[in-house]
Image (cartoon, rainbow, N blue to C red; front, side, top):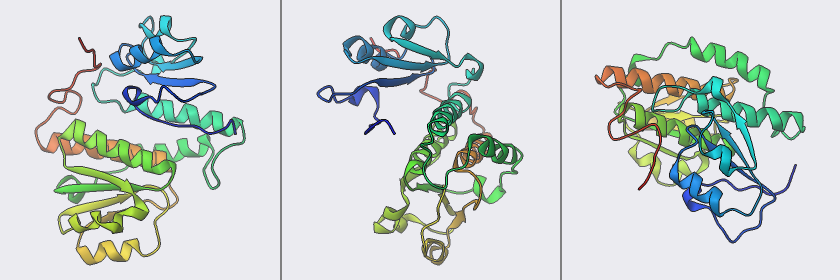
Length: 242
């Protein structure tokens, strides 16, 4: 309800556009690309961070500290879902939730069920997983794929659900899975079935709660492969460039 909004990585910020405010998200508060952007910005900026006393406090006009959601793991799960829940709660207060989106308290109830969800063995054994979503849930699909790659070194891809049949469905096959966040497009389940791939969809469950299921799958897959899901190879808690 506050005008057009864009989202991008800090390194891809379109400097020529005019914004009323920039909202930056940095768990560590030390990421080089975020700090360099804040130094260049002339636009008022608010930062969500999980680390008290980090450099973003001096660089931003306003800082929202979510230190209760910080985590030791290199792979972000708790902080990422907390930031999303906070932003959704603000939309709810403004009466600007997308149609059909649950209130955050209802989403939390679904999340409790997701925490107790037993990860199916056939999903853990899947050779490849494709995550799909529509609208804001496409962002969740991208996040789910990223968590699987980071924590388990898994082959995952993410696409807008309606674009999946325009090519990417060609990789669907027995021993692989297609996971849909939110609304399931008409006819997709039947088409996935013809490929022999496993379709994962939780009708009625909040898509943000489904992200927790994907996080659980990432942990289970990593452990099945003898990997530490909290300490992936080649990754560090914060990216600090020379």
